[in-house]
Amino acid sequence: MLDIATLGGLFLAAFVAATLLPMGSEAALVGLLLAEAHAAWVLIAVASIGNVAGSAVNWGLGRSIERFRDRRWFPADAASLDRAQAWYRRWGRWSLLLSWVPVIGDPLTVIAGVMREAFVPFLLVVAIAKVGRYLVVAGITLGWS
Image (cartoon, rainbow, N blue to C red; front, side, top):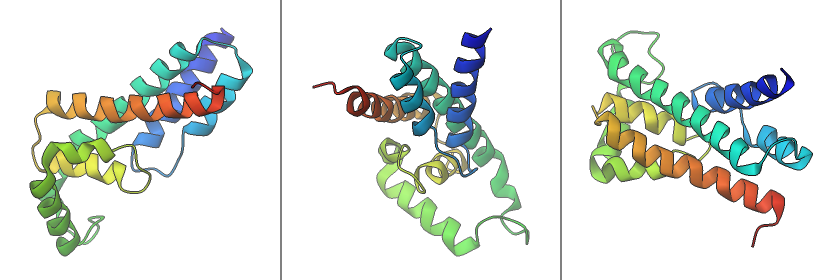
């Protein structure tokens, strides 16, 4: 039962960290890697799946939220949204390789949904970025060379 709770907690932390909510998942991964309670590949896989799933939620949100862009409560003003869309038009899906970057990564995944990025290519590029980030964190933590 403890294993399910531990891995579930890591998944949840990684999932929430990928949404627009302010949270990080690296500390949870590092703590579990140092505790050596699970194989590193299991922890990296669980964190990656959770983080990519959270980004998929952002993509879905982006697909449906733009119709509300003129509402007062909309989280971004029209100029900011237009700038983000122009940036995404310029760099396209490859900009999603930055989806792991704090502050800009999560909004990027929302903009990908707004811009109607196809889901499978979105998922593949985001997965590369997110798995890569967790591999680097694990490598630093465990001293891989």
